[in-house]
Image (spheres, rainbow, N blue to C red):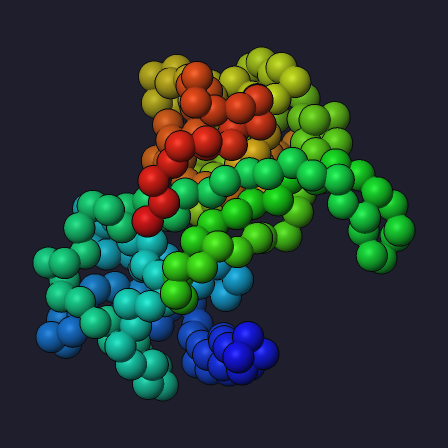
Length: 223
């Protein structure tokens, strides 16, 4: 039964991968246009849809909301009114630090896995690991931090063994606390740090007594 389920999931992913593309329009259950797809992720089962022209907002929609996947457009199973503010944030990520042996290099190192409930059926899945050493040793003061959508978060002004302090000079010196657990990668050439989450979601991962040193939320409510 598990093998049949895995084969079925592979077919669903293949169908979506063949038909989905950035810029394609998304409509609600009544045929009302929501907006174009700006990006999507087959592993997590989510897509980002830009709603509105002037005062636009990003919606992080799980694939299980898709009702039909015809060529060149997508239809949801909910109405536009049903796309509430809960979809303004992607699913919560739970970082997990483990020892991992890279099958290509044979090297064993500490990595950060990212667990989320996927957008297909809500099952817990793990995203590709990020080297903890790359994050811990690669980030330096003054690096630019960008979120998962490429939006400016700020500049690194401080760091400790588990998190970054980032200041956004453009937004009135706003301070963001960024745990290593939400870092996707470090570009030493462009001196940039890329995050796995949008800027709007960073307060969810700020250090609290219920959060460990690597930003793992120990008592989160995942959608």
